[in-house]
Structure formats: C-alpha cells, structure tokens
Length: 227
Image (tube, rainbow, N blue to C red; front, top):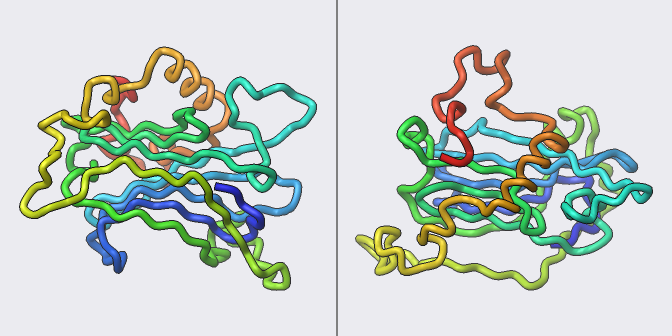
C-alpha cells in the first residue's frame, strides 16, 4: 500500500460483520494522521465480541542519514509502496510491515476469551476522518483544503479459506493450509530478532503497560509472544 496523503486515518482491517455491529470481531491496521515532518504512527487494535481498547502504536520515523534498511521499518510511507500483512490462525495474530513482525497476539488459556477465533472475517480498507482522536489526540484537525485524500494499492493478495456453514472444509484442525501448519504457529529465529528490535525501538504505546487505564491488567497481557 502507498499513501499519498496521511492527514486522515488510513485503515486496513479484518472484520466479522459487514455493518460493523457492536458484537463484531476485528483486527485493525491503521495509519493515524500526522503533522508534516512529524513521525508517522501505525496503530493496531483487536476486537473480540465488540470489546476493543487493545491498542498498540509504533512510531515510523524516516531518517535519511541513518542506515536502517536491514529492518525495513524506518520509512516515509508516502514515498513508496510497502507490504502490510496480518497472519490470523488459531494460535496467534501477527501484524507485519514488510515481512517484519511488529505485533504478536497469542491465543492461550489466559486470553482465549479475548482472542478472535470464532467468527469468519471480511477484509476492508478505507480512509476516514478521525480527527477527533487520531492526530495528536484530536488536537490536529483535518485540513480539507488538501483533499482529495488517496491511498493506493498494488499486488493485493489473500490466502484464506472461504466460510461455509456450519464449518468450512479447511477448518484449522485439518492443518491442510500453510497458515495452520506448525511453521506458522511461531516466528523463525531471524523474525524473532527483528521483532525484539521493534519492541525496543519503535513501540510508543502498549495497552498492556498502561496501568492508569488498566490498574488490573487484562489477562492476555501476561502472555509471552512465543509460548
């Protein structure tokens, strides 16, 4: 996906309901609005049964004087196309930027009631006005003189199983698809190294560390990303 203007929120999501009803499950990948020359912020969020507020935010800052190409994460998203992917299976959700995992949300006994694995998903992408919260917490408003706002896509690809009632032929227990096989249940050694680097350098907000918002942290926050 390439973004031409990022004064509004650009969203890629998987959602269980075409009408976005309150009980929906959802996986969100969102570029929040930004001011010129300020870092771009990408947010991920996870809904289960309509319960959200599981945000994580990463700051993507392009510095032409430094060499960060090894991780392919420090970039200006308006300059070129990049690959944004979500791996969704019964073991974890992984959010990728250019094949680098930036967030892992695991399904364990502690988080099973918060893991979206009971409803089929649709895939959407949109641009929408979220200037009441998305840009500097709502301080920066959309400048409509800059319209039209554009996001551009190429090489779109989906590997998926089409839902059929009561269960699809490729239900996860059959392990017939690559995303249900053991290699897709965790990251490789090199992917773990990249993921750890992202955690040390790019995360600017994680709801699991927000003790003001959650004096008692949600159960899923005790999970390791690996086991």
